[in-house]
Image 1 (cartoon, helix red, strand yellow):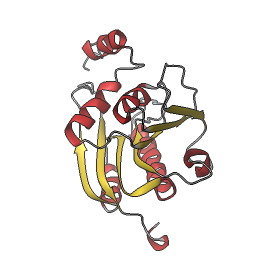
Image 2: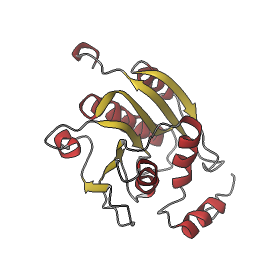
Image 3: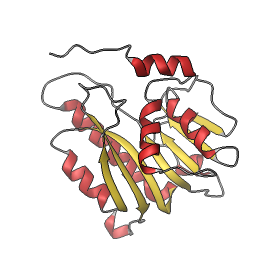
Image 4: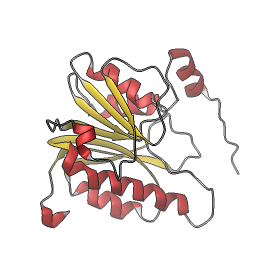
Length: 204
């Protein structure tokens, strides 16, 4: 079994540059490759703790943009004044808590969520990861603008093709992407999409 290296260069770089976690560089790579976030955008970060993606998204959208995050755990990392984070479960939270009473839909939804991993045989962690991604897709009609973008993490495994097919059917553009900042032994991959097409009631 390959030895897991915890304190690699991305870990050290995150510490030096003030990011909450090494995962900041995964979003930076996704942004560099696909440009899913633009200055002034409204960005929703689903499963935002410990806060590294909030920090990166805040830098990208700038003062004229807004970043909203939600997680079961509170965010304790320092974030910009354009960031709001809240504690909650994405599967049960009223979407108006995220969009505001005026229904301010988001330009981009991002998610670096992962289940509490067990390491058990049989791919249980993979299926939990897929269920989280399904919950993200279920939420999109109520929070994401038509034409909006998405980047979300999933663990590779047998249920990935069906999840990818569902996501692909909701967007004009769709890619799989594995950032260099992902550990070599990790099974995580990112689904990156643009051009959201809001499904009809019959398609949901």
